[in-house]
Image (cartoon, rainbow, N blue to C red):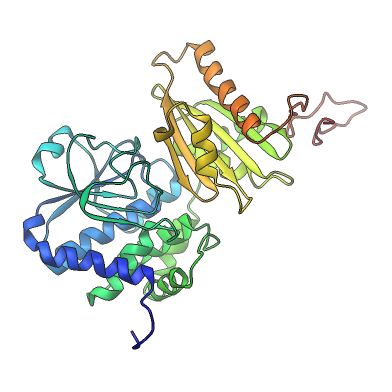
Length: 370
């Protein structure tokens, strides 16, 4: 760094992490690295890189764990293509490890399996506090775009050799969480990404970004389109029972691309919980805060920028339709109120067609008067 030139925040956080690891050294071994439930590429890349730095720099052995499943096909392709060693958490892991790092999540959040009453050693995240984390090392940068940026910078500063697998994971983690750098608000984020990109396996990155989609994705998409309702730039789809929660976010992403839509809300039922994804294409929206405002428990929702998600308990009985529908309808009512959509505005079904008349189907692709 040139004399007199201020060090950017990403580098400061990277150095902070390296100093902590070098200061504690092998005393942190073995380390349990805990990602949030149903981990996304950013969490996976961050955990993978932390494991690499800890082992190569300080001989710290570690295990990466998560709860739930990895359902989204891109995420499974990432883990498979890059041979990332992640494991489902077991109850014995909690007692076996004295040192724990929470990655892309925080102790107060409801989206991770770590007990709230147990101390953690490290918290590395990009999401706003619900309550300020207590740990030996806390790095929370809400403007970094992706938690992977913090670990990428630490790796670049460490002087370690950077394997293609690690670089590719970081590049994809940054791309996916910044919406292809759209959410990259600082120059240092772009600089970090470009430095890592040069070291990537580009063929593997393309395979991860464009994997074959399963039949289940298309059948779920078909259902999502069939039940979708739109009103005043908001499109909503209740998928009912889903094979895995990642389908909810995938359909929400897809629905937002419909012309004229500014926000999409998608829900899915999975193992007694209603999983919810909210998306926006309005840069001024604080989408996580909007979602928290329509949840009963704010801790059950989160996200960043124009992307938000969460889940809450509804019923272990899949056939308790009244309770499920009440939960879904309540969310929509609260969201409409939060967005100030008048009650008089009726929603419409943009992707359904009317009964054929004179040999042709008429699309109802136009909003009801409001």
